[in-house]
Length: 210
Image 1 (cartoon, rainbow, N blue to C red):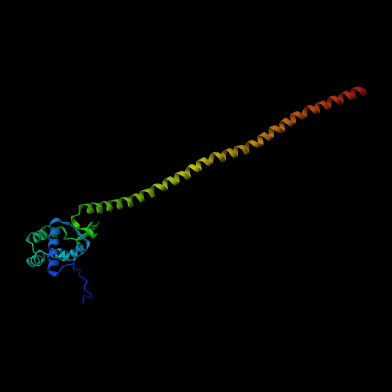
Image 2: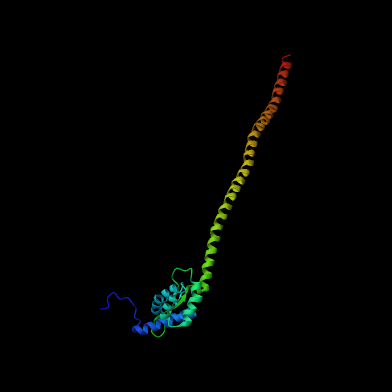
């Protein structure tokens, strides 16, 4: 029975499947990127990543072990000389799968499988994202510092504008008593002729009596 066996046979017998994966691994090491179906790409990931980890230790034993899987001297030398030096600092995850759509004939899901450190476009995007994040953090601090002086300046302007209004109110209060004094003085001036008229009338009456 097949219970618990999760290996994808890829519709092939064991010798055919191993030869196909070895051929695909050699193509990936040589070209750094190949186009295939998603099912084959996932099977290739499990096949080639242990070999790339093995290439980090450049010894005769590790070379012979990798050669027993790849069956190609050119691919083994390429893996140990070039690929291993570029992937030395990476602890794992040496390959990436990028889905591209569906094949026209049988509608199989297609993808690219590539070595991570050889995709220059992805590396550039990651570096630019890091720099922009740093700039945004710095810019927010500057804006916070600029906002504080502007608020203080507005408060000062309001205080300066309010001062003349208070002076005008005080001047109006001071001027009111002056106007009242002038009106009283005019009233007294108007009343004085009446007193003179009374004195003239009294003198005329006295003359008549005489």
